[in-house]
Length: 479
Image (cartoon, rainbow, N blue to C red; front, side, top):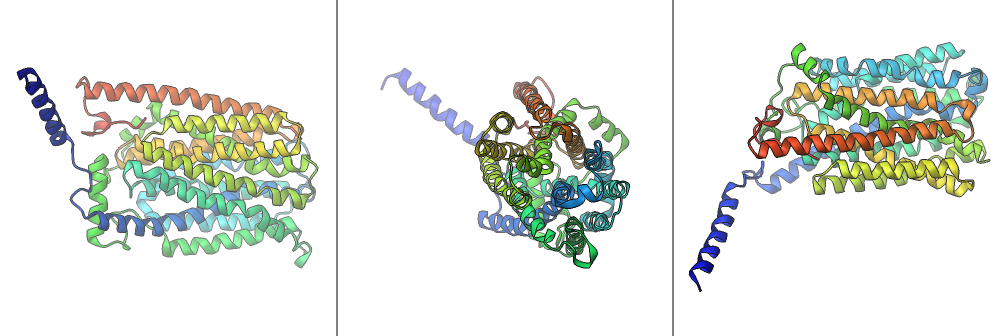
C-alpha cells in the first residue's frame, strides 16, 4: 500500500472515530430500553383514550348543530330566516377564541384534572340546556356558554400531552387521540339518527333529544375526567418516582424544559409579538376551516344530492373512516422522517382536490368521494400543525401561550367556515369552497416561509454565527 493510500485510510478511520465520539447519546440512553418502552406504553394508555374520548365529545357537541338542524330544529326555532343558522353556528367561536390564552394560564394554577373537569361539566350543562330552548336567541346564549367552557379545553389537552414526550414522539400521540375523536365523531350522525327516533317522547322533538342525551353523557364524562385524567409529569400520581424521573430526564435532554418556568407578562408579550407564533396560528386556522365546514355542512350537502334525512345522516359517517387512516399514516410518516412541513403541504393538496371535486362535478358518487378527500386532507393537518408548533418552541411558558394562540386561531377558522358557507349558496356552496381553498393556498405559502426561516436559523447556528436557538443549547428547529 502506498503512503498516500495509507494516510487516506487513516484519515477515514479517524473521521469515523471522531464522528462516533462527537455524537451525543440518545436522551434515554442510560435507561433500560425495555423500561422506557413499557413506561411510555403505560402513559399512552392512561393519557390518550380518555383525552381522545373527551375531545370527541367536544367535537360532537360543537358541530351537532347541523345534525339537529336537519332533525327539525330549523323549523321549530325558525333558523331558516336570514342567516340565523350561520350566526348560531358562528357565535360559539367568539368566546372560544378570546379565552384560549387565559385558559392555558389558569390551567397551571388549577392543575390539569380540576381544569378539565370544570370545562367538560360546564359545556355539558350548556349542551343539555340547548335541548330545552324555545327561541333562536336562547339557542345563541347556550352556544356562547358552550364556547366559554370549551375554550380552555383543547389547548389544555395539547399542552398536557406535549409535556410527556420528546419532540419527535408527539405527532403520533396527537394523531392517536385525534383519531379516537374522529372514530367516535364518525358514529355521531348514526347515534343522532337513533336519538331522533325518540321524537314525541315526553313532548320533545327529535333534535331536542340529541342535545339532552349528549349533554347528560358529557356531564358524566366530566366526572370521569376527575378520576382518570392525567396531570403534568411532575405532579401525576399514576407513575412511580423512577418513571417520573425517566420522563423528565428524557424531556430535559430533548429540549431542556422539563422544569416549568414562571409565566410573566414580559414572556407572554414576547410570544405575542413573535410572527412565528401567528404563522402557526394561521396554519391551524387553515386546517380547521375545512374540518368545521365538513362538520357543519356535510349533511346539507348530502341532502342536496337527493338523499333523505336518514340517508344523509348515515352517509355522513364513512368519510371519517378514511380521515382516520390518512391522519395516522401522515403522523407516522412525519415522526419517522422527523419532517413536518412537507407532509402538511401534501395534505393541503389532497384537501384542495377534494374541494374541487365536491364543488364542480355533477355525479353524486364523485361529489361524495370529494368529501372523503376533504376530510382526509383537513383532519391530518390538525395534529400535524400542533406537532409542528410544539416541536419548535421551548419552555413551558412559551409552549402554553403559543399553543393557546394556535388553537385560538382555529376558532377563527370556525367563524370563517360558518360565515362563508352560507345558506343562500346551497346546494353547491361555491363561495365557501373557494374561501376554503384560499386558506389551503395561504397555508402552503406559510409552510414555505417557516421552512426557509427555520432552515436558515439552523444553518447559522451550525456555523456558529448566532447564539443558541430558542435560548436552548443543542436545540434545532424541526422543518
